[in-house]
Every structure is written in structure tokens, then in C-alpha cells.
Amino acid sequence: MFSPSVLPDIDRHPCLCGESSHPYVDHGRRLFARSGGYTAQLFCCTACGHKNFTPPPPPTALNEVYSTAYFNDDAERTLYAQRYAAPSFDMADDLAVPLAQHAGRAARVHEFGCGTGLTVHHLRKRGFDASGSDWSEEAIAFGRKMGNDHLIHESPTRPADIHDLDVALSNHVIEHVNDPIQFMRDMAAKLSPGGVLLLRCPNGDGAIARRMGMLFDPLFYYPHHIHYFSAYSLAACARAAGLKIISITATSRFTPGLREAVFPPVFGDDDDLLRAASTAFESEELQLVAGLPSHPAVSVDLSLTSPAPSARSLETYDSHESFHLGGPWSYDLLHETLEGCCPMEWSAEHAYWYFGRCFINDHWMAHYGTEYRPGLSFVAPSDGTYEFEIVSALRHAWLPEVRLIIDARRNETRHWIESPAPRTFIRRASLATGERFTIAVENPHPTEQKLVTLVRARKIAG
Ligand SMILES: [Zn+2]
Image (cartoon, rainbow, N blue to C red; front, top):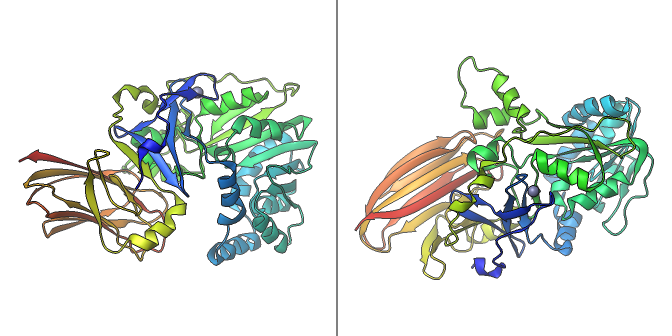
């Protein structure tokens, strides 16, 4: 069973901005992640809002993830083959705009962490002199099989031999690496004197994280995402890497999901709210354009607004209760143990409720796939009236609803959960010793990682 005691009990560690990070708190608890045998805790900087897992997964674990665990099923291959054959690819279309703006339509672009090279392929079709490299040998081999000859396999110890680039491009990679400052330095070393680094990553201080906390953020997962950048920490990282910041913005790529998540649909609603959110860097994706100190562009000064609320509420944390969650590596555990409901038991040792060996951890559950119907089954330790606070939200804004079933003593109620905007249900039940209160999920769709449900249980009367 998971034990928070395996982690060093530290209160702070240095942030990449030069200030210090403290334990991040969500819904009154610290956040722990466990995956592939590694456990880490999420920290947050009070100065720049940067969040990261500490300790980071060892390089051997990352090698395992990126050399084999990615890109290993037929459905994925089929999808990528279709995208290769399609006339265009939305990611490349979207990137083509800033690429042309900062480096021209025929720029020499190299994408670091290009996966199967889809973006490279479609950028070439648009006239860019694009190439790419990736740690995954399989992904590169697949891209080459698709006819893309502009891909190179590289590894952390054997970087790609590339130089004099107009653009060093990186799309959702920096959040995966242990040392983001070194990552930017390595990219900067490949630039021509007038070249630019163009980097995109999830916004770890985006609208969903700010309004609901990281548990509900669709881009929050360990061990893949180690760092969660704010606009300010991304800027700090670039400066620490010796780069000049030319622009730092939020993109609108996740706008439909964001809209669902943070602004309940209102008739006549328009894009103004979203634009306002993006302006405040609360969109779900950040974009940095940076150059070498000799680059002729004028360096922008990022005026700081207040950091994330999570960074301001550290004093509320409760070290007696701990959250943790699995990641995509936990599929096996799910296969092994999820048959109907998992028992929820009180751990006197750790003073929290736990759910055994499965993807239902502590007071939180995530739902994967259609073949399972996971649930939390609370077993009353003594006669009394208990109150349950159930908060549920979809993790993927663009996927359809799932059903949450609340069964208080055979008095079943069903609710459709339709968006990442969390819905809260309060239920009370008088239970006899050993009696169960069940919360289950029914998912009619063959998709993964659908729903997060947070449950708090407390006894309100004996
Ligand atoms: Zn910081």
C-alpha cells in the first residue's frame, strides 16, 4: 500500500525562478503521484506559480517511458497513418502561423521531440524546411515508414547533430524533462545567430488549474508531466537558459474545452470571456518565442499579475491527509483489481480512507475504458449518520459524458457528468456498522481517463 512516509518530508525546494517551492495543496491536501513504482509530491512556487513533482522520476524510468511505453498499440499506429495521409494536420496548421511570422515561410525548422514526425511532415508540405528528432526509436521508424526521411533518432546521451537553425521548435516536450533550463540551453545551442526558439507547453497555471485545482486539470499526469509552467516560470526558465524573450502568449488551441470548463454555457455568450482569460495567461497552452542575446528583437518585459491561488493558500495545508493518484502506467493495476466495487477502508496508521490496490486512491478515482465499472464503496466503521461530498468532472473536455451512480442504501440516483466543470453532490446516509455506501461510474464510451471524482466522507452524528 502507498505510504507517504516513503518521501522525504521537505517543506521547500528551490524553484527554477530562484525563489522557493512549497508543497502544493489541492482541496486541502498535498498531492502525491505514484506510477511505475515511483512516488513524488507536487510542489508549487509562491513567486512564479511553477509546479513540479519532487523527486523527479529517475532517468532510467524516463528512458523506459519514451523508448517503449509510448506508441505501442495498433489503434495509435492506425490513427497516425491516417494523419500522415490527410491533406493537413491541425497542429502544423496552427504552428505555421508563428513560424512564418518569426522566421519566414521557408525557414529551416527542427522539432525536438517530434514523435512520429507528423508535424514535420505537414510543415514540409507547407513549404518549411522542416526536420525532427525524438528519443523513441519506434516513433522515428514509423515516421520513416510513412515516407518521412527528415527524422533522426536521438537519446539524452546522443543528441541530434543539428545546427544553424532558423527555428528550434518544441511542442509539448519541456514539461516531460527533468531539467527544463538545460533543455532550453540545448535547443538554443542549435540556433543560427538570428534564429528563434519556439516552444509550446501546457499551461500549468491555466483556467482549469486555477478554478478547480490540478486534480481536475486534463493535462495533469505523472510521470509524463513533471513540470507545470506558468507564463512567469516559462519566462524565468528562458532567462536562466540565457535567452531573450521575444514573445510569450497563450494560444487558443484548447479554447472549446476551456470554454466548457470555466464558463458554463450561457445563451448569447461570445468569445470575449475567453479572450480575457487568454490575455491573463489562463488559457491551457503557453507559447514562448525566444532568441539568443544577439537577436535584434526587443526583449519583452512580462508584467506580473498575481500568481495562482494555489500558491497563495499554502498555510491551509493539512499534512495529516494525503492525496495521490496513479498515471497511465497503472493500467495493469486496474485490470487486476477492478471487479465491481473496491472496498474503502480506514487506515488507522495513515489516518485516511483507502481503497486497496486499484486506480481508486484515497478519496479520488479516475475511470478508464468501458469494460470497468469502478466504484467507491464506503463501509461504515460504526453506526451513525455520514455525510458524503462528491465532486465529479470529466478530464477531457472534448469527450462525451459518463454516468455517476450514487447508491445510498439501495436508493440509487444517476447523474450525467457532461463537462470538466465540476459538479458537487452532497448525500447523507444513516448506516449501520459494516453497511456500505456506494458511488459508481458507468461509462458507455471506449475512451480512457474520463472522470475524476473526489469524495469526502465524514460522520456527522453518532
Ligand atoms: Zn518560481
